[in-house]
Image 1 (cartoon, rainbow, N blue to C red):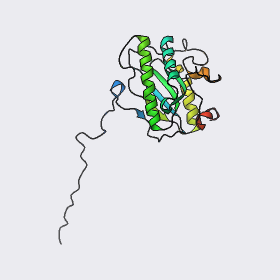
Image 2 (image 1 turned 90 degrees about the vertical axis):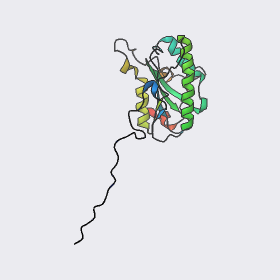
Image 3 (image 1 turned 180 degrees about the vertical axis):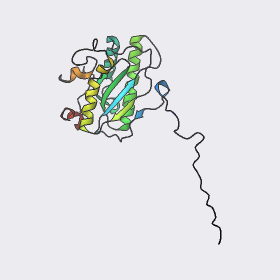
Image 4 (image 1 turned 30 degrees about the vertical axis):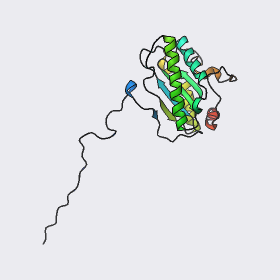
Length: 203
């Protein structure tokens, strides 16, 4: 009887450097925007987070907050980006935005980051980089998801401020003041156009 021939199998190589392997860069070493993998369309809002570097200052301080809202006002609907809601925390911003597409979202947020950085540097009499990385964006695909994001953004200060120093009621460093006010040219936000944001409160 003929002895069966042993088959050779190629095993995967576990050693060496692999594309995409290793810990992802963080903070000022991050080189790309972190856009969620979900496909983005003009009918879907996005929750954008922008974090500043140490040394920029406490963003909720009155002069820095005014610089940020001024930049938001000047950049309204640039590159098709619309900021509908926002909140300013000590070292980061939360934005609820609409855009015409993925390219508009990317260009709009990056352009807004440049405007905010220039405004903050001017007020703080400093130079150099302001944001730790470009931005993180999470695409919102349902009415409930949008409602949760809006609640999170407008009440985010409760996660960062001690109870004895947190403002009572609505956050003054957010778009809460414009929830029930008619939006004019002085407002740093724009009215929602997507169905999801227009009906977020029903979710």
